[in-house]
Image (cartoon, rainbow, N blue to C red; front, side, top):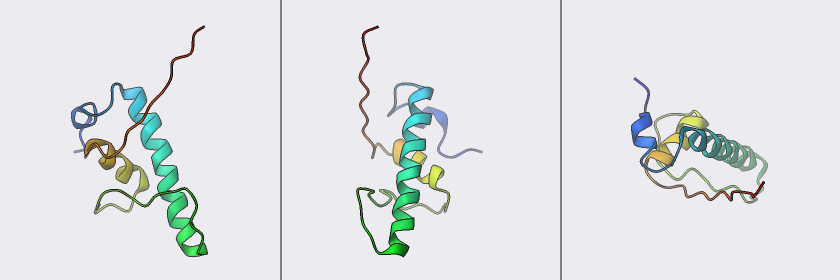
Length: 79
């Protein structure tokens, strides 16, 4: 079984497309955060916002979405 479930994710995000974009971007931030720990530098990448048993950054990001820890905003452009 996949955790978190898609219906849990859709409670906090308005589409499957948004889940993919938000989770991928956040997983990159978590990855960068962990790499910066080894280098001793701290830029704009916050640490994981949830306690996770998983070491997979994408899973951590999806758990953050499911728990409502991430907020996102996208603007629609006029075409």
